Structure formats: C-alpha cells, structure tokens
Image 1 (tube, rainbow, N blue to C red):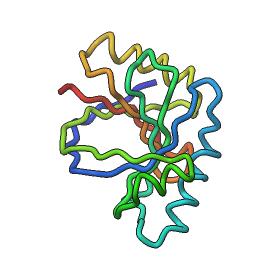
Image 2 (image 1 turned 45 degrees about the vertical axis):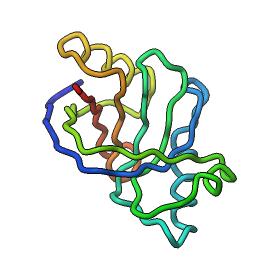
Image 3 (image 1 turned 180 degrees about the horizontal axis):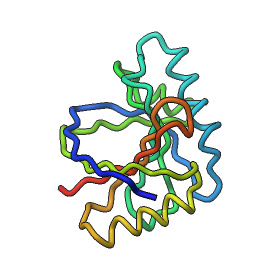
Image 4 (image 1 turned 45 degrees about the horizontal axis):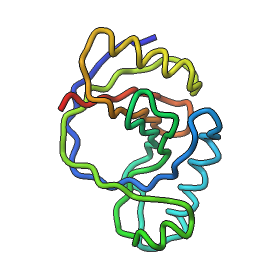
Length: 143
C-alpha cells in the first residue's frame, strides 16, 4: 500500500551499480557485493545508508542495483568487478512510501498503480533505507 508521497529535491550524486536481469536478480546479494566493493576501496565512501534499484524503462528486463557514493573510481577499474557508475543531476523526485516486502512483482504492481494517477518519466527507482526491508520508497522523476 502507498501511504504518502513527498516531493524531494536531490543534489548531484554518483551511483555505483551492478546490472542484473529483473527476474534473476538476488537484490540482497548484489547490494552486499556493491557494499563490499565500496568498503574495500579507500577512494570511496557511501553517501548515505540507502540502497537503490534503478529502472530506466518501465518495460525493461534489466535493472541496476547500487549505492550512492562520494569519491571516484575509473570505469576500467569498475568493469573489472562487473560494476558501473552513473552521475545524477540535481532534480526533483516524487517519493512514495511503499509498505510491502522487497518483492519485485509487488513493487512493479505498485509502480503501475502510481503511473495511473500521475505522469512520470520512464526512469524510476526503489530506495531502500537502512537495512533491507526497513523503509522502501518508490521514486519518480517528472522532468
């Protein structure tokens, strides 16, 4: 169930992520893998305790699972670990509280319900705050 929506301004950011197939992804294991990489790299620090699952098209079968970081790592080095990075520009997001489990089918159902009442860009993300399952938000961009 959705119980609230917030309009939030986000600043510039960098995300380290791993691409996974939607139906085959082990989200918890992938987040641990990304977290371990950040922990072992002295040039990187977690920007927050949140983790993210990015969807670049609501029909895509590929997702990006990762964390926002402070620091820099070359793309060549990231590729050695099957990771990538992307930069995010300052923008406004619409963040919906999600009161379900970290179940992809349930999350996709809620995403479709949200899109029935609002028009958003195809890109959206799931924010998992704290430890997995603590607080989950579905976040969308309008422009």
